[in-house]
Image (tube, rainbow, N blue to C red):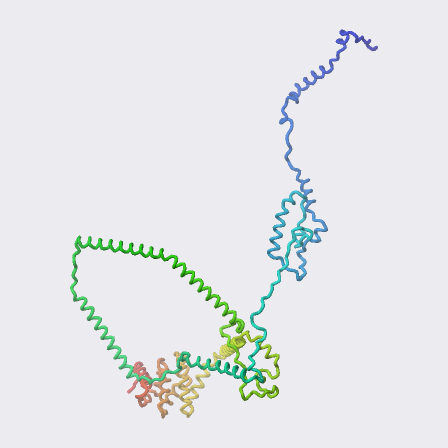
Length: 520
């Protein structure tokens, strides 16, 4: 096909004939495609075409955080190793002030740390402080200044206590020493009399006691009779009941109202007086306050003066100053070589004397007494513990051995040893088991023989006492009857001077009669 001939565009008609229609054709094609596909995209709202993706990429974020949490080598070296113990040093421990200051530093830097990159806190955890920080932590301790002591360093004795004093100073010191000793003597003489250990008097017999008790009983009976007579007189009085009229009631009511009004008027009058006397009361209060302050100052000054010579109380013993070491007139030799005074302490040791005067204000007497008391208590406890252990080990074997020894003492001819054996058996016979042991060892027969052979009243009394101690047991009474105790007890002469003698004898005979043994 050949090329189309070009037309001329000079004329208007030719220009209209050559106008292109490609954009119109493209529009129609596009609209046709849009209608076929569901509509034009330009007319559809943007919410239906797009959406905001709010989901998070956790894998990427976790990777970034893990990278940030990684501790650098320079920081890990500064961290504290939990398996390594810290090296002890002379540095001060963390005080409350240090922790408080560290907390304040953290709070002040909190806003700045939010804006900046996150920093590692391993340095703070390790207990170190940034030396370039403006707000440094001062952990230094203030040095305590010791107060000067009020007690003098060395107590200088008066010049009269010297080895070669002048006559006037020696007489003054001697007078002070004599005055101190006489004050102690007067204090002992004028003090309360001690309670006597024994009260002198006479022993009251049982017959006199009986008469005294009878006299007391008569007084009680007389008092009871007087009380009964008084009660009877009260009962005999007729009880008169008087009727109260309305007039009397009104009069009483008016009187009560008048008394109340008088009491209120009196209170108001006293209140007005107190109000008028307020300035005077204020003056009295101010005067009392001044007096209290004056007394307090006097006590304070007296306490300070006392502390200069005597120390504070250390224990229950009061401080007593040492007596003045004054030489007598015949002891003054004028030479230090012939002096016996220094030998009373530590011979030739003047430094020890000076040291004792330096520490003289520490109440050595009370300390020594406390130490002696504690040492004595410790020795007593040690002795008591040792005795307890020994008694615990040997106590099971002591009872039978002592009873056997007591029975063997009854076989000795000396009445003193017989009385000792009978007295021990009387103390051992406290229950039926021990009483039967004494009988089995032959103690009942020996006591009966002792009572029959006794030639003095003391021996008879101890024998009867031991037999009466065995009497509460029926089997022991049977053994005594078998040993022939009934005729011996009946033939024992009575003692009218000792009431216990008759008591033991009557107890034995009564027990024989209760068990229906022949006592004729």
